[in-house]
Length: 298
Length: 308
Image (cartoon, rainbow over all chains, first blue to last red; front, side):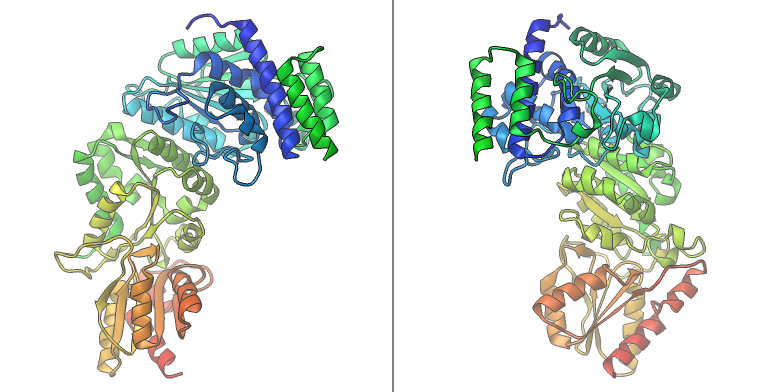
């Protein structure tokens, strides 16, 4: 795959983060911390790696993304809107009655979402089935599954982890599957290490037979290189441990468990947008800020 | 036709259908010998996947396979399969993945293994989901046709199958039609609604009742959901008394479905026969007798009900 345009990805990620804050502020609820931590991974997937056609979300040759950590779907909605699946004006309908932008991903209401997720621990099993189904159907498409770190505590994840490297061997080995953990080290109640530590995470997955890559999940070049590497590995699915920062890009949200599942107030969102884009704000962001200011006055 | 377990008829039907339909795949959790998909796995090894004792992943994988155009049959004992309810709820039902869920070893009729292996709440659980139909065939012929129907059905399906052999209740030429109940034996004094394992016993009970001057109408409900309201209301309107018979807990199963229908549309005196409390180890005949699901027990309950 061609080298990524890093400056472009960085700009798209900044836009994505602003849109996440915008949508959550309008919704008055949601999960900013993990949406911000996973943004760079999703931006790389949507704008550099995955093959898809927003006009034909059911195109059979498309690459699949299963966002198993479904509560961070705002980050995916932002990418999908920017990619042309639906208008960006629709982002502010997140979590509102009648909107296809459900609080957690809904495959039926929003074409382009591949599976309903949000009950943690289920997405990897679906991704494994998809990877196998694509192999059986003779498709070259790849499956990406993004899991949360806290989510890995679910037993079903380990069931699937044990299966995937062995399934379909040798003719239909799942080397079309790449699992990425958004390792931001915080879950709802507290830091992961204080709830149920995952370490040594790399060794655990290796011992299940997965090739494992350990990267900085905010470094686009590293993310891209890992996905290149995963694509080159034959006969096995690949697991990527992407170290990230919860609430990335917003000083008062970074590494703070309280921002796992709390929407910013309008003033907080405006401050956060200022931090992400710097001064002066481009015209589109000024419009977003104006919209949020009107929200506060209401 | 000889008596045959519906799981055995299922295994044979799947083997036959798999010969011409490349889309069919099986996903098992170390019970393929019991669910009878082992024959399919032997004939088509590249289309049969055993994930080990991991039912949640079996169900999720089946969803992924279904969403990429395969026709997956995810099979286990009903209690272990539906025991992973939340995975069925989100990965299959809400996702609208056309997975064919097959729950075998239903009811107390599995016998000696006892309660932990008995599917006794599975109908109630799947009934609570908006979009998964429930089909419980009553003999070999009906099972084979229900399996063929499931392959062609565009959505998810729950097939409920027995461990024990089932005496044939249908004649050659019978056609299973999804969503339709069937009056197996006409009558006018009482309606007996049943499906699956105890159905043949209901026909036997109707013979005994006839000897005592009670003409019972026996209705086979192969499709428990959606329920054939017209046939059941028609029969209940004619007889004025309804008894439901099932090898499932009395709460939320076939009896529950019939009670909801009658209660809303045409309140009719109703008696629900089924399993109360937990099951236990024992020989299957003894267990049916204990729970009043054998011909004598059914006939006795009907008589008591009519003469109360």
